[in-house]
Image (cartoon, rainbow, N blue to C red; front, top):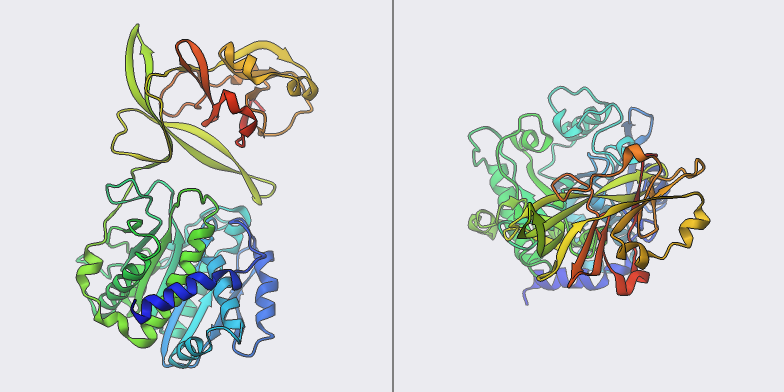
Length: 473
């Protein structure tokens, strides 16, 4: 094992010692990170500066450490709902705060590099857990117009630093795949183009080599799950312009990983990738990486779905067809965007053999039909609690009607949907964009049910851990 790989594996195995335990999911807010930033002021290796305020008046911080001649600038969460790297940066701060661990490694980095971080460029967007800032402008399309406070701050810091390397840290959708494969694009890279001609300038070449070096290392941990964005020039984006203005800029996007909707494993991968990248820059080892490594990274494609039910028999106009059903979940914010519930939609119906699911089930020999709504109304939550789901499903129902003005929620943890108004009964057709609520049978006996896109084995209903939808609220 090379020395570089050993460093990466040492970081991997020791990660839990440095993970910032107060950040437990993706929906932390500015108020959650401010105390952590304040704590850094007590450690002499950190310099903490307020570099401006967001539209709603939240402080934006620049955190720096190191005294080396090579400048590295990392910024995260330009998009408020893309926090994976932000959490990883606080893990990195904790790593550097621990004087006893990795002393030679840290001294090497800090003596060769000056490192600068803005860990949450868009705190107002993070408050709402939305992509854009509070005036609904995409910060990453505002480098030229400079309409937003946050974009102005980022540009001013960039101009003041004139960094040698920049890391533009984002999250991407779970639907991206690593090329035409069954693997989610868990980490995607790009060395942005500086112009429409996609010129290979010295800064861009450095970025490509560094990405190639990172790919070689990350293949130790997530082989087959790394992809690359299209390098089409976007003149309004920060990364493209920072490359044009002389900084070797690396776009890093955290995508999906099976069984990790909260991206805690990908947070760890970010932590390893960024610390390793700093080491590669400090040592100059990235320069030895051939450009062919970058060029060979598969393109980001969109071949992932949350759930695929394969080989179901569906009746159409008295004929039987064998189809795959693809289902995706959207997150709906609740509790001031501190939490969410899932709202499912049928993405596609038919031959989905080129797609892969985060979850897949082969239901060959099973028939599927739309779930129905029971017309007999219930009037209280107590009545809902008494419903026997198995009996409900055996009659073909996935939805019930509730006549209770006090019920205010948008979702429920009952294994059936709740309808408050007959005018809002969900569509019963099995077609794209409809709500996925199905009865699945074999030999005319109900075996499985899908409620709001969650597959339920009726022999194991108690294992239900999804959420249903309240219609007509």
